[in-house]
Image (cartoon, rainbow, N blue to C red; front, side, top):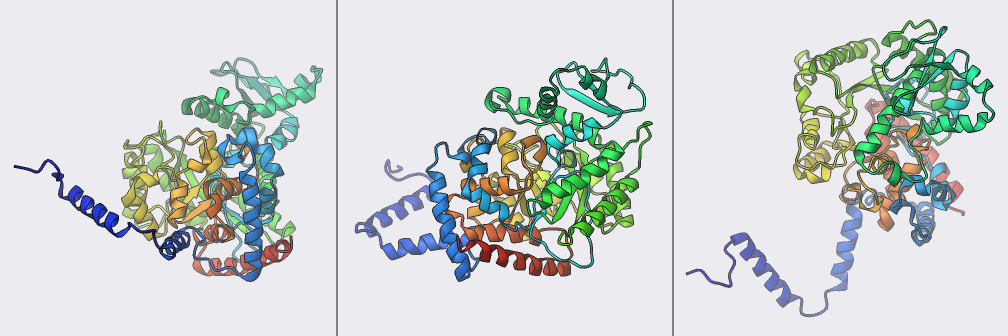
Length: 530
């Protein structure tokens, strides 16, 4: 007969024995030295925990710590609230202002647009971006006040309450969802309040709102609006003359936030001219290269950019296969420009990485080297096929994981990605705005950071979120996700990570690190006397 007291499971029995022993041994007060040792071990394991600080860095770290304590006493505490409601508070934050000056390394820009880096004369690398979508690169203000004021810009107010734009020498024909096109210069001439009209256009190009919970009560609601905005942006930013100025303006806005190197996701849209003719991918690559060279000539400390070619995950296997083949061809023609390949679009409603396994196996079958940089785990649907994108991304040897929100639910994948050095491209504001997490203190990246998992900070879609550069996302990571445990060493390692986990060749990473270190030392020197 089995004992009524003793558990049936041997594992549970062992646990009970352990507890009984612990109770016996722990009757007296725990050893404070043992407690201190455990705390030190935890701190040493977190991101930045093993970074040794100089005396000047320790002084600045102490100042930062005090600033963060004051920040956490603010009500409302910004990272605990929706970004749209507290952006004005963050802008006034002493911590945020300091982060704006910090050389950040790189950011994950899913800028589905461009990436060309200069192989000679690496002068500086104070900041970089690894995840931004090209259609969401510059501020909505610039798009409305610059792009929409150009000749032959037409607008259509759609049946669904959004807007479309098109440049054309003649009035565009009606199409499904749009029955009437109006030329913007003619329309503005009839308005009594052009300023109010322009503000309304800006609102149509961003998700930003004073009451996000009401405007976007569910993930479906915010994603529906999110995708409509990309349609609206497309007609503006793919018009060839705007496209050139837009890319240059994007570089400028990033540069002003200490971003000096980019890796950007580029989509399938082709640039078009006033007569409706379109350009091929080679034309766009040449534009990216030429503009990067022009920008660097005017800004000698700018490094450059590379492309991560991407295709929407809602398309068919044959379309993705065609895109992979095109990416292989483009990489052969532009090895200095093309960094790799990705699948983009909402994971919850799109097709999984495994669904496209035949197309994604092509590089290996053809013995071609096409690195993958997969969006994976941007979901809270635990246990679904979508959730398993994390596993499949690693099976296809992804170089980085875009978002990786679900990674903590996969201990095997988490261990594998850490051992392989596969960094997570962390986009905190994007995850919050798209309703994956409301209070950023509860973001699963806190687990990754406390465990020392490789992470790079990213901004995803600045246009739609009302941000520029990386400083807002760095703030949310440093103050909210990292909490008081995150220190100057955390910031330093996050900046270094953006170089370490970039697609730069090893010798170029070494050069970039030396330049970044010079910029970092100056940053410490300039701010340690505060």
